[in-house]
Length: 70
Image 1 (cartoon, rainbow, N blue to C red):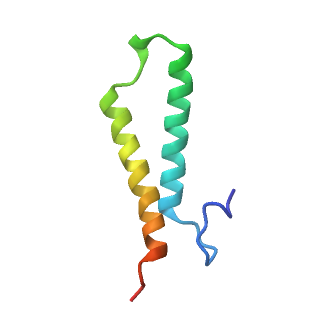
Image 2 (cartoon, rainbow, N blue to C red):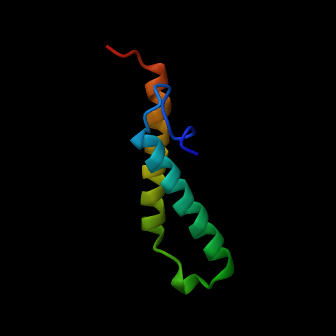
């Protein structure tokens, strides 16, 4: 698990951790909403915000691999 969240140098990447935690939050929310009624579901805006943060974190990690470091 630590290797999956680490960069090539071996240090843990905060972007990968945030992306993974956001993914887990979305997955748990989706599973919980499958078994509960709609009146206790989180606000759609909150789910969308977590989705955008997760996409941004994972996109930033991918972007770092292709950009040249100066």
